[in-house]
Image 1 (cartoon, rainbow, N blue to C red):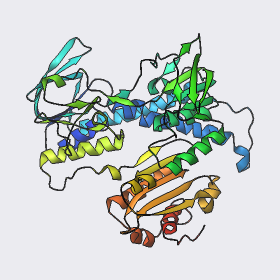
Image 2 (cartoon, rainbow, N blue to C red):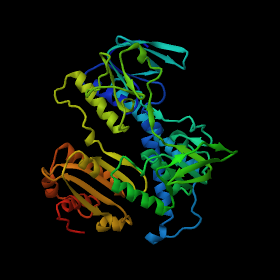
Image 3 (cartoon, rainbow, N blue to C red):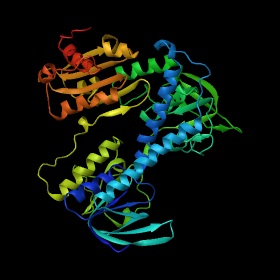
Image 4 (cartoon, rainbow, N blue to C red):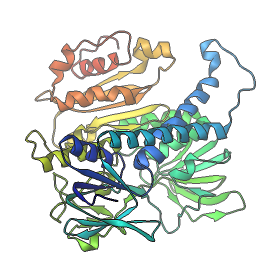
Length: 467
């Protein structure tokens, strides 16, 4: 490698890392990215993107099993699992290649290997644990090493019977039954995928409700919908040790004062993630960690001068779009751009691509009240929307939470068809600090699902028209 001196070196080529490098290049800095696996990181290769390709197949499967609702009929409907997985992997490969093109277009140097911090603006890069690629220097080093699936002593993935999200994305055969441990976005998305592909699905959640990061009302609606589809859900649950058979797993689930023994073909672990902070040379710096995540200030600076950290490795919320935005903020702060300002976590949307979809931004009703706000809450059901009925998707709700004193939009929570595409409207509203007045005066097109967003705002002030 001819070049060893850079203005910025980013360790990790995921959605935080590659975006940071591109923004640095746009601002005239000489930038490099070190990536040991695939450009695009977990998101493009083993997370956000390939799972959405799988869920699209599950959506097709769902529609095929409800053809009569739309006036169609078909015989012997089946699927080829290998093709479903191949399509998902193809989508991931295409986008990873796209990131490579973007980095090249922006003249960002890509260094293939594993980076270790040496201190004082220096890193060493090795490949395959044996070959030294070289030593590199930069005034600014951004750690964007991401995170991985969490495991517990009595719950370890083996790739055969017990899976992490990686294994669950590339099944060699379709399990007839699955136990998903954890009901956050990752767990529920896989539960929804396998359910709609024909598997018998059980979900075990340690806390008292599924999708615990969401508004309680939305969580309750989601549970009701999933159970109606045939999913079995245990909350407040404790899962016992795994007893592995030749091709199945037996365990016990304790919930609601009862204990039940179940046997399933496969188990999916979705019990959170831990930051990738090991073996990257943090011991050679003043960088501090807490519970596997790097500690940073509002500008993503660590305690080591010139070393920054962004994305999943710095902690929740573990979202690709949060990582990308942090990358931009970090680089713009380094460049001295006056318009740069710290991220507001209350303006970060969260999405779960299950059936039905769930999306939210800002404070839940309970959190708003706990923060001391007097609130006005609006609700509008999908059954009151013409487009939802025409689509055959009448199940769902849009919920908005306002500060009763100022009219500030504190939060928005949605469940139903395409809400992951709709939530950005409320994200923009929160970023622009709009009140109920601006939202009420906004004209929404008809017929669209977005009209429910308007009606929910109106409902908060007793003015809903269509329900």
